[in-house]
Image 1: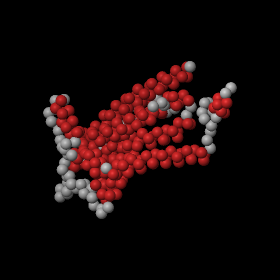
Image 2: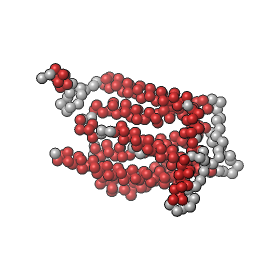
Image 3: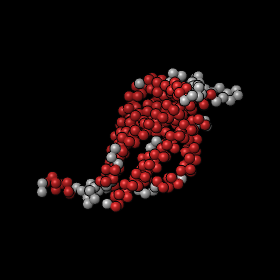
Image 4: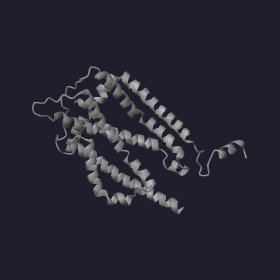
Amino acid sequence: MPLDQIDVDKDLTEDGQGPEMSFLDHLEELRGRILKALAAIVTLGVILFVVKGWLFDTVILGPFDEEFFSYKMFCQFSEMIGISKALCFSPPELDIQAIGFAEPFITSIKVAFIAGFFVAFPFVFYQFWKFVSPGLYAKEKKATRGIVFICSFLFFLGVLFGYFIIAPFAINFLGNFVLPRVNNIPTLASVISYMVMFTAPAGLIFELPVVVYFLSRVGLVTPAAMRKYRKHSIIGVLLLSALITPPDVITQFLIGIPLYILYELSIFISRRVEKKLQKEMAA
């Protein structure tokens, strides 16, 4: 037997995994993964801070511009489905103010690193997966092939949905909501907070099919149970939509509809996983 084959066999356990690591080895591995992820976020954050003018004007405050793509899309869509100009609207004219002396500078740093995390999400998740995956069996690794791409795709899809769909409706509702003798002049910090709220939760919610996949693999979720509680899920979807969106019925339905579609997609995924597990057990 060749020498290199002997070395490989020596480093593998009976179940095909690599040698067991001590607790300190795990901590060292985790530390290295975290540092790599932070390095990517910091690097992208610095780059985005350098182009902060473009970042704020085009990206962060883009939905506050009446020339924003979504407003034209909504208007064309309403005319296409025959409801005249019901969805034709433009953002309110708001003067965004910075109260603190250093607020523009500090907010620019915060926004740059938050955006850096968004952009670096695939690499950050890759580092997390590289730390977790050695503990999986060979067949589990095979079943989760492409997980980094899938999770990254769903995350960006959710963020884009929140940015182009939820944000315009929410800005229109909140910006036009007035009280007697009260001028609505939002602060820069509040605008940033709400823009993050419109996008980040949507990105995480779009990971639902992946979560259901893993829960189905370990037997905690079954398609029969998900079908049984389908009616309850509608109530849950509406409640979740109300929690993560402003108190605007249209905005809540805009996030509720894709949530329910994701729920139905998760039932399909759970059924596929169940059939696959049954075949594996039969084999």
